[in-house]
Length: 292
Image 1 (cartoon, rainbow, N blue to C red):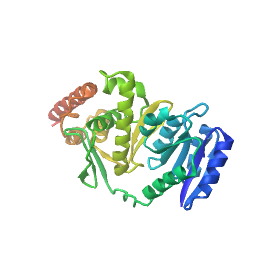
Image 2: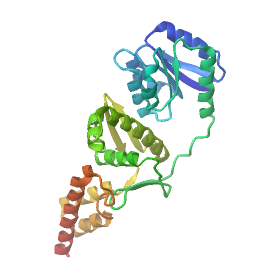
Image 3: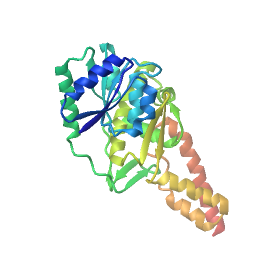
Image 4: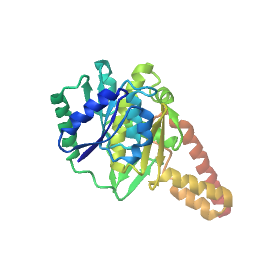
């Protein structure tokens, strides 16, 4: 059974859509909302597999609501419902499954439901048993000892950028400025949405609870947990050395340094971090020699 939530600021539209979906086999309406913020607050209460979202909502448009819902549940299928077709291109940039124009025709809704159920029938990918990120030396992420493949190089760069700012909120405007400095603001934001879509597909393979990309108020934050990450290991070992000044700590930190930070990449935004790690490495080498 596919559970869905409905969000529209017009109660009559919600009622009509709920009735039509009620006539569809294998679909259950878990909740309806006229307030998008209420839908966000209660997202954990429902195990919804799909969301039907109006685009013109008060206080937060449906595109942003979709981003925030998907950030918490990357497997959520989104269907946009609107009276205007000029939102179509933007809607599909946030991984929408379908786009319905008001007034909704029952036969058109049936096509959408069949599409949702078909995707639901696909067997989920088993949760990986191990995940490893390497940034010192060549940049790669491995899941169960298999290197993750990227369909878009810019999505790969976007992931590395998020890793460098792990745990910090970054505005979409800064992302566009740093990664697409030569593009117009409109085109850069389009590139960003395309890369975010590709990135989420890769993160799903790594396990959504381990590498989580969150969106809120025009900003994104990536957090990493339960992952073998060489940068984190090196930084923690370096801090232990600074606290103890012991040879063991220096040697442990050096053992984590597998090469220069993102050494085979030419990303300008990573240059300062690369130099900082080189300085720490040189400090550790001198300390290890002096202590020995």
